[in-house]
Amino acid sequence: MDEIALEAKERLAKCVVSLKNELVTLRTGRASPAMLDRIECEYYGDKIAINQISSISSPEPRQLLIKPYDKNDVKAIVAAINAANIGVNPVNEGDSIRITVAPLTEDSRRELVKRGKAMMEEAKVAARNVRREYVDFVKDADDMTDDYKDRVQEDLQKVVEEAMKDIENAFAEKEKEIMTV
Picture 1 (tube, helix red, strand yellow):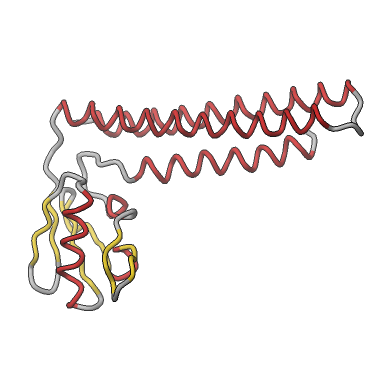
Picture 2: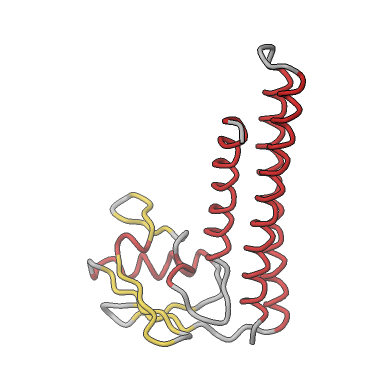
């Protein structure tokens, strides 16, 4: 495989990893510390991720326990979780925060699947953009023969198709996880 196709493959792999990281933040029926990964709270005048100023554990399948390293941050973390609107209600227990994740209804499951599909489509668009960028680069290159350009474009197409399958598989896994009661 050509260097250009290998470079494109690396960038496409990043698209897949990015999608998987986004899908992890979608709520399922179980409590997962990853649900809080993208939530930032006010920390001495700065915005910082909750998981960097506290430990997050899951003592039970439907419960999260957040223990801030500094007890003064409890109120800021509770406010940030409420503002994030992820469908959970944090309970301030003085030096820690407990979140109980309610079981998902059929409608909320379908809504989460829709959000997941939107994330998948964004990843597919990013993959197509990578393909277009490399195809344009190959077409504009004057130092390549036409046969070589065709071969590189075929390699690029194979790499993109592989990435699209990975994207669809990642979404299908998450969809199955969300829809499992």
